[in-house]
Length: 217
Ligand SMILES: [Zn+2]
Image (cartoon, rainbow, N blue to C red; front, side):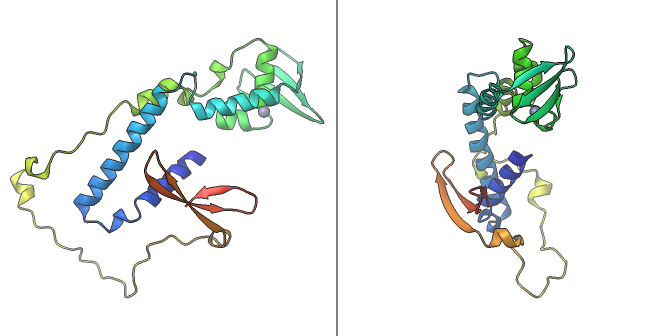
């Protein structure tokens, strides 16, 4: 979910200036962007040699480290109590749920689930969402975005070429149109940072918050 919001914001940020372009140029800009994006993601998936994608594998490894310090108490073949210092969590391997809520929400094993799996000598693969696998990423990005031939080579049907497109008939409001979204108070008052990504060749704008978190504008 967070990733979806992040990608929407990236898309929103990189198309900000392009929205001023005429329709054909705007569409070509978007097509080029998606072409570059798809190719980059495909190369990333091809360069992954773990069962799940790099980012999720890192999260899993961090969870494995956290799981090392937990004590496991089995109730049945599936239900386990994890004792993590003064806290306790209940994991059900059958329903793929943990009382911390993270396991069923992310569909990626939480530290408590990993401790239970290790106790049972089971592997994590059957407990991850198939969407996290390298195979899924490869399938998602294997369909290329086709390049667009030169405009002189386009085969435009006559009835479309002859069509005259008129401006919209709606009444324009008197003030200048709103171009930026309204920002909540905390977002409007945070310090802004600019970051150039050499891979995508796009500039991203970040807001830094007092708790050391950052988010893409
Ligand atoms: Zn948990």
